[in-house]
Length: 376
Image (tube, rainbow, N blue to C red):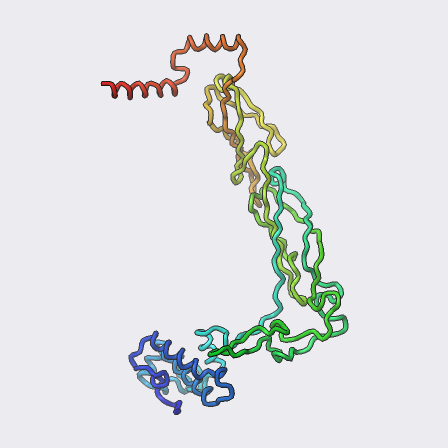
């Protein structure tokens, strides 16, 4: 086949072909003549280079316009092709990059370094008081750590590593799977390209061993449910001396007897007697800050009313200041009264004018109005 022909003819498309048609044609021909499917065939390799160069030009609107006007001369002698040598300016590796933009690294790829160790998760439950003040905690975890015998290398002290015979140091091997030739990570060296000559007996060549470790952790004031604390480098050690992962501590708060929390705000429900609600008074609430907070209850307060104590809530995590404490009043109706107390309440009821409880008076007035409308 004469490869020094028109780019459109190489891709077997019309000169009016759109981008989608060009891409489809290139994919089809590239799969047929790719060198990995035709090992040792110079003709297939030459054709693959030619169609890749043709597609590289025609997929670019500016290059295609120049080619349609001037032909291949537009890309010679330092022209738009940027290759500095016409058709020969680009190497096989450049055309492989074009191919891999369609098909990924199934026909090639870069060897990666040793894998980093895995990250670990630890769930830690603390009290609301500990979340308020912060604490220094110690946690115990089972973790893979660098082997002390071989210092994490995986090799017996005094021995070394050699190139992997299976993949010849590339870290990948190729296998024929029907229509495709697929590259996979080498099962012998696990992508490293080298193997240990004499594996360490303590770790079996892995470079790490399982240990139970106690780690000191600082819990800052203000942490909340779900707060994540990262301890860098305290995860699992990587294989064969690779870097260790990180340890992530997830905070969970146990239920408090009095307070509930929403961000930096503390909530509590306080029952007060109906006399305190009617006449007003004070209530004393011990806060998480170990201080006693005096809350003024205004006279005539209704059940469900919320009072706010500024600056008595949770501290701001990694910031300044504190939130508020919100106290919800629950007016308690007495259930056990003495004869004298009942007598006093009856006397009060006889002297009621309706102005003492405007909400109930207004409600029953509305009901009366509705009933009058029905009966009229």
